[in-house]
Every structure is written in structure tokens, then in C-alpha cells.
Length: 249
Image 1 (tube, one colour):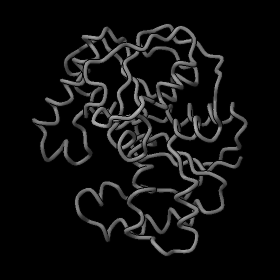
Image 2 (image 1 turned 30 degrees about the vertical axis):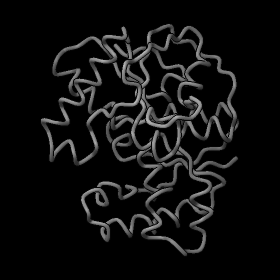
Image 3 (image 1 turned 120 degrees about the vertical axis):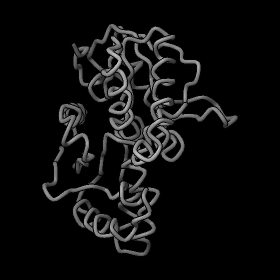
């Protein structure tokens, strides 16, 4: 499979190892991975603040860049959801757009639904709390939201359970928002920080050594709070654990 790798801005600029871990993981699954040089922001920050027309050129560029690939894979639920759930505002009726939506996947979604990954040769003997990001859970359907009375499932948890030695701890509020919300963290700083601290505390009371998530934006927000308070708990993207990265120092 020829994969067009879509890397979010904040991973590209601040957390490049998450992108590298994603590439390694996909290549281990037999995929041919390409990183298109012309890619840019998906336009989510503009759309979230109501500047829809500023995001339109980015959506049009995304369609042009990624149309040739068999699949588009992104290690972020929120950026993936922007393409698959909100690009209709810009691209509905454009040639190739329906195909683009159908072949664009968040990383965990791709590994479970397309690759159907069922074994890994990695070890991570640590206590891990899984943070389910809002976009991934409620827009992409990566797991069961607590408000829905349907059979329980979680694609990120399914993958993490393939890792030898990992212990997934039980949280009290399994799908609570971390409070980041992009520009929400700027416009409502106090509320955002309180939500982030609540999310961290839930992992602490469960005995987690690591907070893992499929969205580095959520982890970036919580890591900022953790660092300022000098807490021992760490944060890791799911791709890093699945690719065999060690516990950060």
C-alpha cells in the first residue's frame, strides 16, 4: 500500500519523533510511506475561529496533494476529522473528494480497520492511562463514548494490548476532555487549565506512569501542566509506544 503521510503542524514543529515513529510503524506493517513536501496545515485552526474562507485554499491543496495515494494516514484524530468531517464545506462536489474522504484514516483506525494489526514485537513494561481525544472518539468513532449504550470497543486500547508487559490502568472518567480544544485554551485559559489538571489527576489516582493518546495536541496541553508542576507522570503518543520507544526520562 502506498501511504501519503499527513503530519500535523505541531508534530512537525515540536514532536518530530511522533512522525518518525508513525513511519517506522507503517513500514513494519509492509506499507510504502511517502511524506509529500507540499503539505501544510489542514486548516482546522482557521475553521475553529470562524475564518472558513482562510481555510479553503488549504483544503483544496490537500485534495490535490493526496489524491494520488492509496491511503492517507495521520497520527491525529482532530486533523483527520477536519478532512473527513468538515472539508465538505469546501470540497463537496469536487472531483476526487469522495474518494479522498474514504481513504483518509487516523493512525489507530488505519492499523485496526485496514492493516488489521494483530501482533507486535515490542515491550513496554509500564502502567499506562489511555486518554481518548474528543475528535477521535466522537467524530471518527475510535471508541465507545460513555453516553452511548452500545457494546464497548476502543481501537487504541486494542492496539496497546498487543504490547508485551503493558498495564492499562482503569480511569474514573474514561472519555473526559483534556481542555485543550485548540483556540479554546487561549480564549478560556483558566477553564482549560482546570480541565487539564482534572484529566491528569484521574491518571494519577489510577497509578499511571504514562498518559498515552492518539492526539499530540492533547498531550502537549497536559505536558505543559505536568512540567510546570514538576509531576513525575510522562506523556507519550500511542505511535511511540507501538514503535517500541522507551519511557521518556
